[in-house]
Image (cartoon, rainbow, N blue to C red; front, side, top):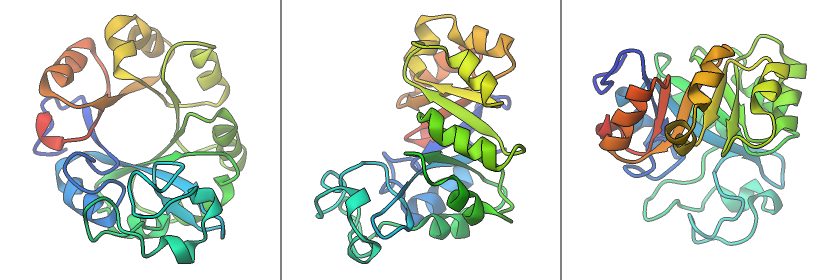
Length: 228
């Protein structure tokens, strides 16, 4: 475990490599966050030329001096763009996997379907604990059809639809809900009763973290590791 975990049963997950402390989803963020968390979380999508890049937004404008959609931009144009006010560039999935210590887990969020085979190829042989997550049910279905042994987590913003049934059908190990769902409903209890771990996102302050720990969650996605 880590030096920052207040409760040994609750995992601290660095959201985009602790995005409030370091330039999000970059090599530097993973290097700096990894010693303080149990797991880092990254966002993966495919760019126009086919490479798997680690970048959250659909568009480049908020995080870089570039513009346009990542999905319509070739790697040659992406690789030199710097993230926020740093000298850090947009990494490939392989770049991130190369720098995260084996003792730190990696939560790979797939931003869309159509990547399962390549993502699994990229993570083949990786020593880190891996959790693959997505809001996209088709993306999770593709992963499950490729490998029936990997750990999947269904991401949800609210309890609409049938998240428990969907997670069951995908043989997920976890459901990762918006933290407000945990604090305002009995969803955590329902998920636990159905055998799922509950990792909540995204926690920005110590008070909310404490309330969620008291509520019995299994993991906290945090933008700062020092709030826990």
